[in-house]
Length: 378
Ligand code: ADP
Image 1 (cartoon, rainbow, N blue to C red):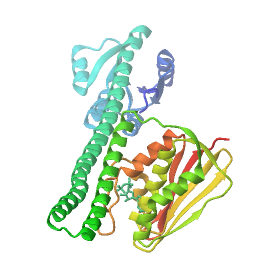
Image 2 (spheres, rainbow, N blue to C red):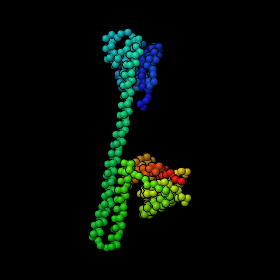
Image 3 (cartoon, rainbow, N blue to C red):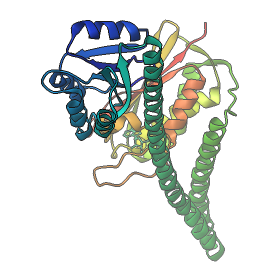
C-alpha cells in the first residue's frame, strides 16, 4: 500500500444510528470507514480487506461481538486486526475477561466519550501506518537485495570472463615471443609481429573499455566537444572496422547523405560508438552477411542505423543488453567472446551526448538493427 493511502477501519453495530454516530465521531481525512450491521457482514468484509481497527458492538442479534472476535482470531487474514468492544453499561469483570480472551485490546463504554474514542482509535491508526511503512520498506529492501545479488553474480561472471579474455592474447603473445627467439626467418618474423600487434591491439581495446567503464561510473568522462561533420566520423569508423568485416567476408553497405550533418560532439567518442556497433554486427553474424550503416536526418537530430543479418537477439533478452556485463547466450548455450561491457559503454557515451540508443528490431536468425539518435548543431 502506498504511504499516503487512507487507513481503513471497521465499525460493527446492528443499529444504523450507532454506526452513523460513530462514523461522525471518527471521520476525518486519511481514514476510510467501513460499516457492517451484523457479525456475518463484518466477517465478509474482514476476509476481503485489511483494517487498522475493528470497533465491535458486543450485543448484536445473531453472532454477537465476542463470537465475531473469536472468528476473527481463528482467521489467518483477520487475526491481527485490533478489536475494541463497545459495551452498553459497565462490563463486569467476567464479561471483560471473555472479551480479552476473544482478542479484545480494549473496552469502551456507551455512551461513547468522543475524545476517549478518538485518541484510542488514533493509536491503532498510527500503528497501522507504521506497519504499512515497514512493509513497504521491507519490499524496497528485498528489491535492493535482489538487485545487489544480480549485480554481484554478474560481476563474478565478468571477472571469470575477463580472465579468459586476457588469457588468449597473453598466451598468443608469449608463444609469439618464444617463436621469435627460436626462428630467425625474417618473413616469418614479420607475420608473427603482425599477429602479435593484433593481440596487443585487442588487449589495449579491452583495457581502454575497462578504464572507460570505471571512469563513467565515477562521472569522470569528459567529452572533448567540437564541431564535427558526422559523415567524416562515420567513414572513419567504417575504415576502422574494414579489416574485421573483410576477414569475416561480410559486405558493408553505406547509405550516408552527402549534405553535411554537423554535430557538437566528441569526434573520438562518436567514432567509438559506431565502431563498437559495427564490431558487434561483425562478431554476432556468421561469415558472409550484410552489414548496413545509414543516416537519416530529422529536424534537430540525426538517426544513425547499424544493421546486420546475423544471429539476432531473443525477445526476452533484448531489454538487458545495454546493462553492464549482460551477455546473451547463443543457441549452443555459450556466449561469443566479449565482456558484456560494449553496449553499456556505448549507451553511456550516447547519453553523454544527449542522445539515445535503441535496439530497433532483432530476431533470432534474422539479424538486428540498432539506432543511435544524436542532436545536431546548426
Ligand atoms: P559483448 O562484449 O558481449 O559483445 P556487448 O555489451 O557489446 O558485449 O553486447 C551485449 C550482448 O548483446 C552480447 O553478448 C550479445 O549477446 C548481444 N549483442 C550485441 N550486439 C549484437 C548483434 N549485433 N547481434 C546479436 N547480438 C548482439
